[in-house]
Image (cartoon, rainbow, N blue to C red; front, side):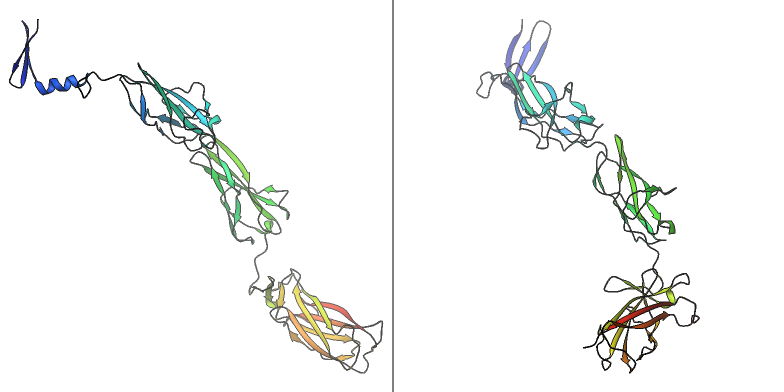
Length: 378
């Protein structure tokens, strides 16, 4: 039998074998575990969530997410159950009730699978005690990432000129990190099709060669991560050209002007345009303006070429040698003589020559052209 006696601020408890002393304050605190603040027994309470569960982990296929229980009040003990759900882009209703239940996903941890990719994940936690249950849902995760997905088209960067180095820009990608890339360069036709793989060209950079001239370049890029791989074809490049000759300048028209000295021996000068004014010629007393333009067989405008114009037979004066200007043009003022025939349906023929100073008279890169101007009687 226990006997208790008060000894100052202590309570002494003893029986026939044992005696121990308990402070009054500690005894009062112990009683509060079973009594309310007003001294009455605390009522039993069902679970009430005070802080929602949270998901930790990276939302990527193959990785594991972990759920906390959140914070709860209610009569102890509390037990917890979990149900992982798969939600749409909006994350679902606040309680996750409209999200898809994932069969068998009832633990605190869940490993993401291919079917979760592009969905947002949540976990519904149910707390239970003797007085009842309550279910709450975590906030949704970000959308689950899976195999690599290209989100902006890869492109070829750099000057598309033989001898230059171009770089493969893989574009933008999403998917589980980290993503690595491999490349295969392709040589395509002028429309960007009929592409052929270039042997050994498997780096991110590629040096253009003469074989690439007049072709468009593309590349295949393969993105790989821990869960898959995807290959994407790049956009087509501009057409590859030869390097610009020495002294090349770009005209406001977009054309390239080069000095005559930069035209190689295997190319020729071309009298590309001859313009007469007036046309038709209606009077011997009126000067004839003749404008001549020089290019080469590659299409470059040629400056510093020598040009002369002569009527055949010689029925005009003027047309002596002049030097082509930066834009490739030469302008003459020719005066008809007494033998210049002016009548309707008649044409006067002119011989035009463009050549380079220092070249042999009948060789080199010279270009020739016969042209005519109409005449008409008034």
